Length: 160
Image (cartoon, rainbow, N blue to C red; front, side, top):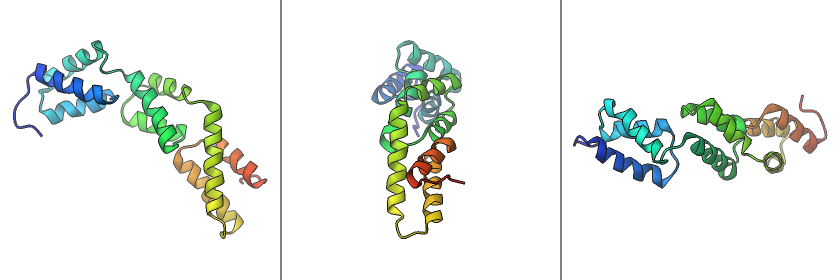
């Protein structure tokens, strides 16, 4: 928290650096404005300035966020879109970001995660291994239909 009240110009400069460092969404910038102690009446004006100068772009943020979470943390689309919605990203931007994830990479990642998890559970009973593998993939945010088909191809039996 800052003790000193920042002018809108000073806040804009700080936020340009904040947004230049990594992609941000509108809600993160709004939160930062509160942390900086900027009066609420200036928030929309500052955010509009950041958008005009292309420091802030929700669509670009959503695509970068989705791609990063998929590549680095191997999250599924369900979890990624939930997190984007938590950040108050528009439905349009969420859908656009989901389309950027390559379907073949997505399937391959789900299969790789399932194989590794199933392998890690050797020693467990068959049904327990299968259930824990399914639960793991669902927790990572993969769709049930995809999880079911991946586990079925892994075990040779239907997930029910």
